[in-house]
Image 1 (cartoon, one colour):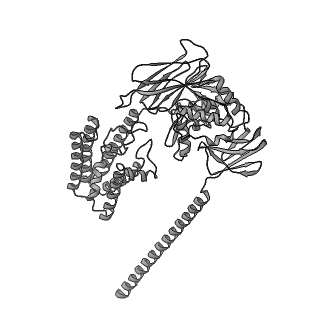
Image 2 (cartoon, rainbow, N blue to C red; image 1 turned 180 degrees about the vertical axis):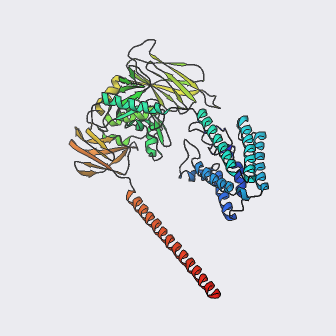
Image 3 (cartoon, one colour; image 1 turned 60 degrees about the vertical axis):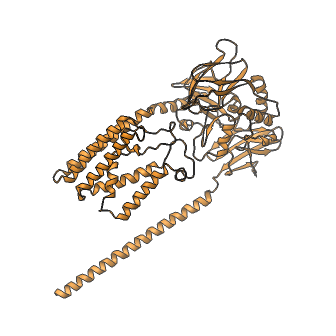
Length: 575
């Protein structure tokens, strides 16, 4: 409840999963009590709204109710998102109370005022809410001021308008100051930061990519979720409440940053940059290469890197890929190696070079070997990890239980090393286990040549429609790096074919040897039933509105007839 106090630091999306943002002006602490004492409103209405307000407040502290309000979904990111309903109800109650304030007794205002001050003073003495001292002090001062202004408005006869203006001005000033304070506490970023990057991306791609086929692009160290979508790119990273669970599980199993309904670019290896068809990567850091990609160009503030081995949206693999199990009790590198072996039949493995236990403070040096890809896997989350390689330096906060690509070097020397520094989370004291893996470029290229042998060409993506063609040398599985969904229908040479899950998350289609035309169309499952229900609901709403209008006209007609009857009687009596 101390979230109603002034100058409370807002909960942001990263720091807290249990708090709530319910600040809507200190005056509501007075008005909610005043609303309870407002006899201009029906008792049933006051009780009903107070009970609903209490239910919403309780839901913020009771997991099952919280789960229901979040659409039967575990809250993630921004906690207690239904707080806007609580605030809206509270403000409408406060408006009703202040609308009737001049008809109330002065003692009701003073009682409401005293209750709010006592509550705030109690919180300050007991440190309820664990707020900064100035939060309690400013709130108390504002409550004193609001109490005086409310009494002035109640008692004023001739200067009612002036009292309203002063009260409104103080309210507006409080909201503005607290709003600005909240933004400053959580950090600010200018609109131009995002727009400039959007413009830069479009210029870079327009200049360096002249193809019309489908490909994916990603961003190293995103400022926000879905930034690739904002820039106009098809990407791997997504934050969506409707993201399939299997897709998240796949990303997590191969060592990518992934949780609940989102994934991140951290953890992408050379193998899956190729498999997922990430042709371009943009970054604010400049070097000759980044994550086995070469720099193509620069447009303030972004560098463009190209992956010359990015695979098509669909490519042929062995039918053994059906046996790929992302839920096996294996490390991320073992699951990736299993994919490569099943897809190509080529023996392949990542070598476990070293295993460390990192402590907070010291910088750990990891030797990079020429001709080898190097990755480090964190098995526990830390508050932050800073990774400096010959190509770049980056700091990742909070979510670090995934792989990190340390790149590739061409020669031994002082520059062929990576530096790792970690910061513990609160209450974290034990060393954090990490594993360092490598694989030789030569062994990887053998796998890649098999994956790249038969790919879809002339791939066209138009919203819910995808088409392309492929030449198949040997019958097997066409692996489509599109999340599996029952809404997809696939046609091969004009005939409908069945699809199946690959790694539980991707889409597979059996193809025979020869040349094939592929066509895919997506229609969300349940669209027909959902549309029908919506149409029926609209019809019922219109019908009920007509009935209400008809009923209202009948009442008005009856009232008019009664009035006319009384007029005739009076005319007869006094006639």
